[in-house]
Image (cartoon, rainbow over all chains, first blue to last red; front, side, top):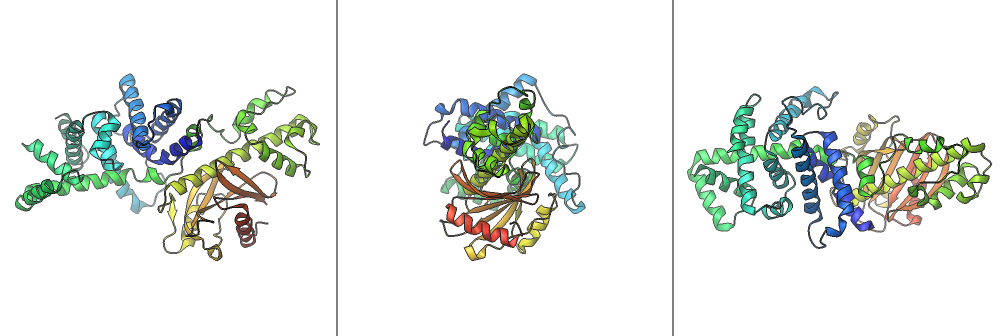
Length: 175
Length: 289
């Protein structure tokens, strides 16, 4: 294994964890996902093309493993099953309200279909362009655009309706 | 039509439109309050989404992921990795591959542990108390290797982050506040060495793992590329005291020592001369020598 490849992998770990956390909805599952992605990347490092974005390549690996897991397990989180390992137990009270609002966002994300979730995270959170996200997810740019649009509207609806608005979110996501 | 409109607003928000398209959307927003409200709502949702996952970037990366990125087996939980050696009492002790990679350090550490300059290859003849003594020495070596590897990896994260080092507590305002906050998660309070004479500015603190226990990683930066950036790790230790010892891991220089239950490591690209000088300064300021 080349030192440079390993260095690149270590440098991108925080972003991989963030992306995986958004996909999986769980801190522990996200780290398992990143670990599996590291192992796969090391096994297939010869497939990485120098001159292309390393982070996009890793995002693709993370997303591919996650999709495989979703398909294999048919796992869809139920309400209230998501935030337990994200909530701090001894935080100052003044921060709890803000954290609950952010948990609402995470919960809304967890209700999006997997393909929309990945597109939304790559573009909105990781800052990839549509073209880069399309390459990472191996779909046309137009597909990224439509997924993003549906995901954003669904997310917005969820936040507007607040808790209990999951039906609206799912409806929007399914459009 | 509505879907196309939403697509256009989202693309505008993501900066994916050309100049003509942007002007078209801006004219539309000026003329249509409903579209304007929709845009504001979409922007707010995107902002909240980024905030919701921001914390993941600033958390310490678990050791097992760093090990996975290096293609190594998962690190032990509090030294559990060396348990197989206990089951092989009396058998030939074969160091795992990652230990053999650290032979020079092992030699240095074991030499210090027994107060002599004997080498790692002389382990079998050490004046330690039989196999148990060897195990204790090897445990110490394994623990030492692991946290030094991690210290080098954390430093690389700092370097790769450029002007925004990944710290849990940034040094905004009074730097002592950052230390007080990070100390809340540590067994012992951490004091902040003033390294301004070296041109080093404290940028923040990060919680890391050192010898299986939480430790503070203090991040300093400087315009002097011969010195910085620099990391100073301070944690607790159950290992014996050792004098400052130089090592190099993954193209990163380290100078580490232990004193009265505390482990220290200076980590950076600076050469050994700078590290020795700064280490002396740190040790003097922290009563760590």
